[in-house]
Image (cartoon, rainbow, N blue to C red):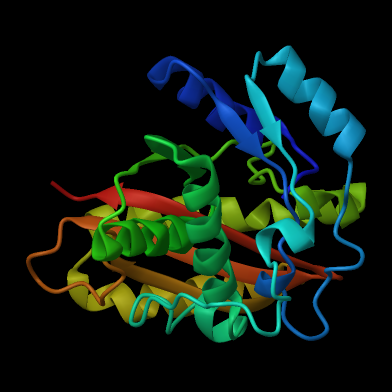
Length: 255
């Protein structure tokens, strides 16, 4: 959605390694913002974005208007929903958000017709939802996921980080420290401790001065609660700090 940072540009570099031509879409999608969210204040830096993408050697920057994407208006637009995967976490905290994401991504795939598309791991639930949509409707698009890119203190890069003060950035990095510490414990402790690990992580985030929305340990393949056979986990976290909602995750293998 623009305001590009090093995390976005890392996805461009992955695409350039895998494809002959690279298209980047910059579009602040109104249908994935809920009531009271930051659509109007979302940072828009198109000139800088254009320069950064030109420096990366992108072949085409596609920056459509709202009317190009929603010719019948956002209120009457066709919607695409992915049930199940969108019922918890960011889907529960932001009702309708993922419907907006899948609806706009399907439109962009239809307009651009890529062979592959690259999404970031930071929005872990989102990339799973998009994978499910692509498989379910039979789109000929290969989905690739790029790793989380972080500041030196561990804070996952995000366009919304520009709303944080320097002191808040240091506080926000607590999320990654808690994720890493919990991951280490998951590798060494009994599966029966998962609920205790989640509760302890939420307490740590609260004590750091944040308002945690969730902290969960799930099966990395489908976000189901892990059973005794699960060996690939994802730790998911969301918390509010001042005006900013922060999300992050950590993948854990116990094989």
